[in-house]
Image 1 (cartoon, rainbow, N blue to C red):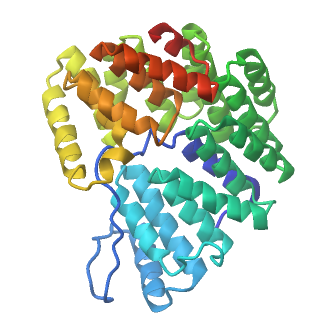
Image 2: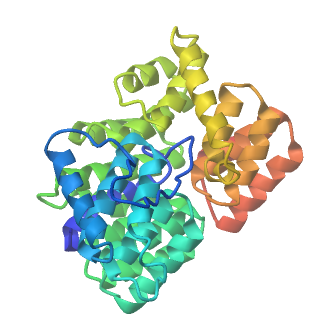
Amino acid sequence: MMSGRSAVQAACWFAIGVAAWASPVGGWAEVVSPTRDSEVVEVLPSGGAGAEERRLRRLWVNQPTDAVTAVSLARRYLSRAREQGDPRHAGQALAVLQHWPDARTAPDEVLLLQATLQQYLHEFDVSAGHLELLVARRPEHAQAWLTLATVRRVQGRYADSDAACRGLQAAGVRLESQACLAENQSLRGDFDAARNSLRQLLAAPRLPASTRSWLLTTLAEVEQRAGRPDIAESTFKQALAVESGGYTLLTYTDFLMDLQRDAEALALLTPQPRTDAVLLRLAIAGMRLKSPGAAADARQVRDTIAQANLRPDARGTHAREQAMFALEVEAMPAAALALARENVRRQREPLDLLVLARSARAAGDENAIREVDQLRREMGLRDRRLDALL
């Protein structure tokens, strides 16, 4: 169980990449509730990690209401979901926590983990409700404030996100609070103030590598939205020099693909674990380049989407990725536009509006283009990439 500053720093990477690195394209998490101890739910990996997981599972089966054991086991499932991009593990985590259905009486760490799982599964309103309950009873809970700020930002609710950022500062976590507020400033178009704040934070001595990489990645995205691609690229490279993977790598490959530098993106993606997020981008870059493996990658994404859509709620959960695939690989702009519209009802990060605008342009739908413009004005979002499309 993490506490204090370490917990917040560990959360930063998931918070800024809620829908990117480990977010699944395909299946929806099914809650698996074993009815007996002998039921096989999953074949666990061998070795020390698997042995520890089996030990925790035995403890949980015998004492399912023990919060410490349940949280430890559920966190392992969530970590695997993030690493593999497989939402079934998030479903297993929810099943472990099912003995606390009432958020009002759930222990703090159970409630936080439930909210984090709901965030991972894009149930943002439910997640925010749980987090607001948690910070109301524990205003010093920095991790809850950070996750709440992220959820509200993903929803395009910047004022609510600001309030959570300030709650983070009141909880005594200054650096993350200032970075949180700076990111929101940049989303509103105050690029200079955001840039200055992040650079001041980066000037602090002895920053942990994960914190430095996070701040540099945030700054690179600020420069990207500000329409300064050269500076954005150099900043992305600085971040990757500190920590060379995860969300930063995926965001950098998106940046390269926006500039039609698909061969560079493909070279960076090819050696990465083939999570759904990576596979989607391999398919897009590969199809643009007509690379030998592109058709197989596209077929795998297509099959995953088809399986996911057997569940009625999966399309809404992963509509962004499905819209990207329909637009870039299937060359079906009308279908992409429908998916992108569905997606922005749930989440409104800059990429979500960009996918909607690109789909509207490709479909030649002027009404949809006006919808995007109206939506970004209502949100207060400023992004030079959107300016170029609208």
